[in-house]
Length: 323
Ligand SMILES: [Zn+2]
Image (tube, rainbow, N blue to C red):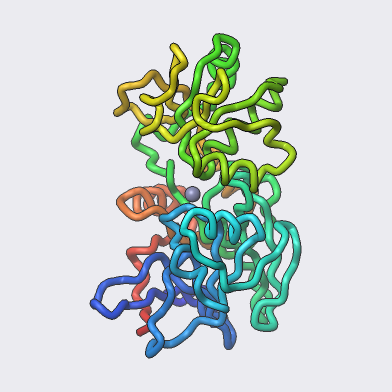
């Protein structure tokens, strides 16, 4: 798709060696190509000028892109990728909030509150169009006004009631008071849970399984407070499939999912549908491209925004390709 009349700003997808689509997209503008949350192109293929990695969740493909010298990720994202995948990050890093030169383009970075180190990227084209790529977002307040918004839709289905939610901080606090343990994914949710417990004044050791412990102590640093091995403390924060190993009587899975055997407490790393709408209002774009997640939600949100009169498309409508 070609975006705007005079503009040479264009969203493109790469066809991989098996004839399918490489994940997500690249943005071609002026003489540059920035790839977003995608895997590395094979050596014979056209190489982008940068692989922007918004955060270290597996569905954003940093595991592959981290091996390119053209990878661009925050210090925390790079470190989280190294811990998660046990391989060395080969790209360049930045502190979230810094502005950096990427292929001679000044790129601003913005916290999104989704995970430790999660970052949105923004820049201007030669003709002055402001581009913003969000990654996954929990807090949109630091995002700048932009003309072209490339956004997520994890909870963007306007017709699904489960896309409307609020974090149940009161239930989390009560569970903490009763000495419960919590199931939380090792990267993202576990650090959110520990940070929240410390903010609620909990000062004792928190037990964690190995990966959660390593990620939390490295990424939260001092703010993590004292941590211990699994069952080495009264209260544990462990990956959900290790909850059965925890000796606490009360156990909760910190999730919005309904398909679990454990009682759940709603604590999300994401904006809900209403939050996504407020984010769009805040950014006030001329055009929107919904690029994540895979599945129907990107298209459903794009359709909804079109009906609201906003020039919107989704990943599956991109008809320009790189090989
Ligand atoms: Zn994510």
